[in-house]
Amino acid sequence: MLVVTLALAAVGFGMLVVALMTGSVLWAWGCIVVCVVGAVLLLISALSGKRTAPPTTTGSEPRRRREGRDPSE
Image (tube, rainbow, N blue to C red):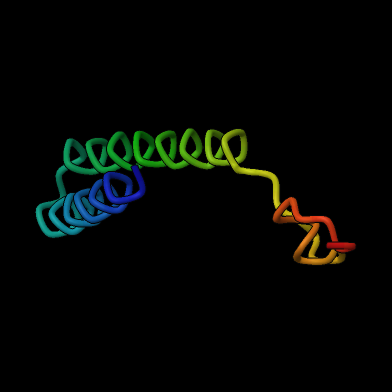
């Protein structure tokens, strides 16, 4: 989804350049719409990434215990 967001940002920038060169308000509104869609996709991606992140270990526990082995073996 990050690639789609990056592509939308590039399209939005291109539309902004065209809007500035032609002086057309229609291209400027198109740029705004494309950028808002990209921002929404980026926000959805960031929020879903936080929910599905696996729990991380702090590194303070020994490696053998993290792997499920008993240190007394």
